[in-house]
Image (cartoon, rainbow, N blue to C red; front, side, top):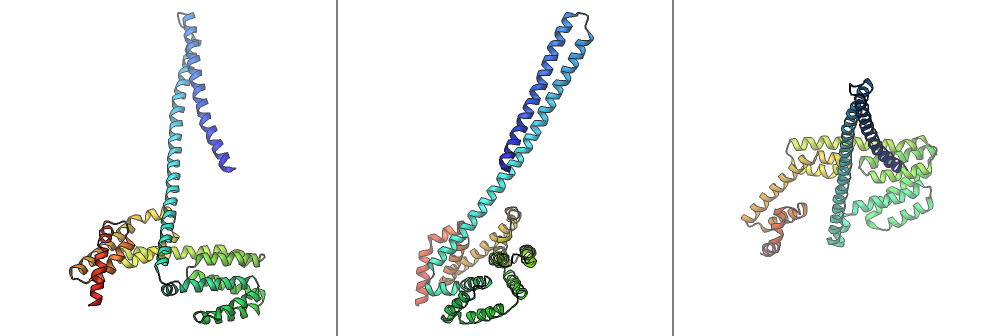
Length: 338
């Protein structure tokens, strides 16, 4: 409704300036014609004719000024519209970039063997399993919570986690309401310390539903936002320090985490320094690759080439290495067999 009202007001605003300009021009023309007729009727000139011409001249000048002012306002409106469209485009680009990174992670997961997947995603699995069990716990569904813990304990890789969750469940079940609230707050704080913001938001949502009258629960969203803003400031300071010291690898690691905190506008502000870091990293990898090839260290050359193709897929260097990847694989295989 607000958007429709805004568009209606904008149309009325434009129409109003057209009406004002037309009225002033009509007044100028009418007074000019009437003044000419009056002057013609009285050859020696008349005071009314002069007044009419003066009014016409003032009306014409006001019409010109109103036209000029309307053009300025229209130009301002166009500039604002261009900025809005640019921000929308930035948001679209950011979304496409994030989706591309997500697809890259999915593709990497598809290529991994089952054993490698278990190792690579073990931490994520443990976090998701723990949060699923704690979700039932914070909903006071204790029977389901204990059943899930018993099922987890049957798997060797998760026995320690199951025991930890069982102790947590026992402590929560035997606590008073105020103690339960404080335990949930402590859990949210731990998630924030580990930068698991989406999990923290999910816990808070359940927290407020379970304890709708708790002022502590209601205060948690702003508490998490403050911690998130604090972490963002820390990362920006670390990024600035790493860039100044030309610590390329550390800068890229910081940037990977910092990316989730930045708005499109902030991302554009860091674009120049980020591009410089990426160029430096690509240059360093290129030097390592060239040295490995010249010294016939094919295993190192293959590994470095694969990193260049993975991290800088659109670069000219990556394109050239892709064309030689079969040869690199063959040479590396010969080296490992000899």
